[in-house]
Amino acid sequence: MVLFGTGLLTLAAACGVFLIGFGFGPIFPNMIAIGAARFPDETGRMTSIVAAGAARGGVSVPWIMGQTIAHIGAAASMTAALVVTLLMAVAAMSLGRIDHAEIIPRRSE
Image (tube, rainbow, N blue to C red):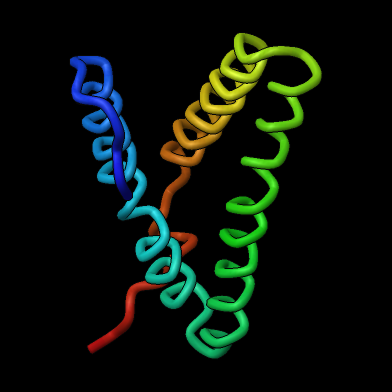
């Protein structure tokens, strides 16, 4: 990726993009690992479903954001992104209260 500009804002944006990627990077492999532990007999199917969901989100979310910017405005687009992020955080926190020992069986060695 080539960034044009040398201002402080450009540097801050580049750091922000790096930090977002650094934070989101572990999500996909962890989903694959959890799915493989949960469905050991259906690993191929589960991996396909997770990859398809990731691809669908990677295509649809930027399109939705672009449509929101084009028809409503940039501020509304960022507000919508914030609302969706907060909803995902609430969902993640509610999943954190689930007893994972019941969901993911431990393998006997």
